[in-house]
Image (cartoon, rainbow over the protein chains, first blue to last red):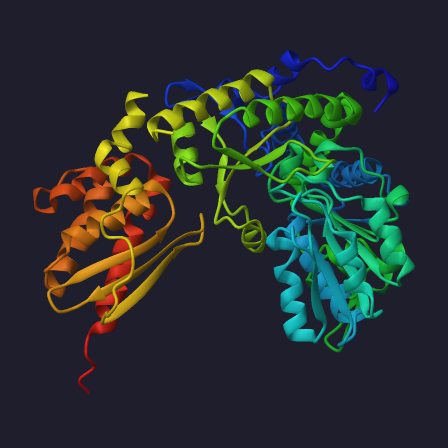
Length: 415
Length: 141
C-alpha cells in the first residue's frame, strides 16, 4: 500500500460503515459484536471483491488457455504477493494456500513431521495452545513415534521460559510449535526470542499466528520463523482460505500433503513427480473466490495500517481491563504484560454459558466455553470462560455496553 | 430485562443456586456421566433403582444444574418405563416450548426452546439418566 494510504487517520466511524453487518439488530437491540477472535466480520471491499470475481471474471485457475482463466489466475496469484508482503516473506513461493490455520498445521505435521522428524525426536508446544496446535502433534506422536512435550505457562498467563529450558534440556527437541497470541488469555509470546531460542538448540519453530496476524505487523524474516500459519476469516477475510508460510528450503524438501491435480510435474501409471512449492501443496482446484476475498481483506487492513490498528486496539484493551476489573465477582484470566484484545473472564455469580445467553438477549455477542483449549481450561482451574474479543471496528462504547450487561446479569443472578 | 427473566425465572435460579438433590448416593445401582463438549458442562449422577432415587453432581450453567435438580425430584419413585416417557416428553417440551401438564415443575424449563444453543444444557441430565437406567438393566442371557 502507498504511503499516502498508510498515513490516513484512523477514522472509526468510517471504518464501521465499511462493515455492513455492524448496523444489524439482534433481539431488537443494536448488535454489539465482541466475538471477533472466533471469526471477524467482513468489510464491503471483501464482499464486493468476491462478488466481482463471480460476476465478471470467473474461471478455473492454472489450467485454461482462455481469457477468463488467465484473468482469474492473475487475480488469484496476485494474492500470493499480497500475503508475502503482509508477512514480509523473502519470496512469494514461500506462501502456500490452505483452508485455514488448522489445515496449515496439519500439513506441516503430516509432511514435515513424517519426513524431517525421526522417531525419538521431540516436539514442544505450550500450555496455551488451541486444539489445532495440539491434536495434529498428538497424531504424529502416536503414528510416527515422536515425543510431545508441553512447556508450562505462569499464573499470569505468560510462557514460562524456565519450563521451556527444561523441555529442551536433553537436546531431543527438533520443533517448537507455539502460538504467537493465546486465543483465551490474549497473551502474546515473544516470537523473535522464541525463534532464536529454538534455533540455538537445533530446533525449528512453527508459529500459530491465527490471532496475532490480525492485530500486529508480522515480519517472518525479522522473527526468523520457519513456519507461520494463519486463517483468512479472522483477518476480516472469508472462511475457507488460510496460509502456511515456510522457508523455501523447508518447503523444497517436504513431500506432498494432499495429492491430485495442480501439484504434479508429470504423471504416469508407474509414478509421478511433484511440482515445486508452493504448487506441490495445493492439490485440486483451490478456494479461488475466497483467496481473492483474502486479497481484498489484506488490502483493507494494509490501507488502515497496523500501527493505527494496534494503537486503537491497545486503547480498547486498556479500557476493557479497567471497566471489567470494576465489576465485583468478575475475574479476568491471564495478566500478561504483553497482551491484546482477547479477554476471558468468569463471574462468581453466573456460569459462562448463562453470561453468553443473557448478553445475547441484550444484543451483545461474546463467546463462552472452552475455546478449543480444554487442557488450558484445566490449567486455569475452570471448565469454561466467557470471552470478549475486539477488532479494528470495536468501539469503547461497546465495551461499556458489555460492562452494563454484565452488571445486569449480576442483578438477575442476585450477586 | 423482562425477556431475560423469562428463562431465568425464580424456580430455575433457586435450584441452580441451592440444588436439593446434589451429591452422591452412598449406595447406588448405576451411575452415568454426561458431557457437553461445546461448553465443558459435566454431570455425574447416581441412581438407586429400588424406589428410584437420583442424586447429581453438576458442574455447569444454571440451566443444566436446575434441570438436573428438577429431574431428580420428578423421577423419584418412578419406574424405568415412566422415566423414559418423561424424558421423551421433556425433550419435546424444551424443543417446542409447549408446556406439558404431565411434567409439573419441569415446565419451568420450557423457555429454553427460544435459546436453541441452550437446549442441550437442559437435556444433558436426562441423557445421562437414560444411560444410567439402561446400565442398571440386569442382563439375563
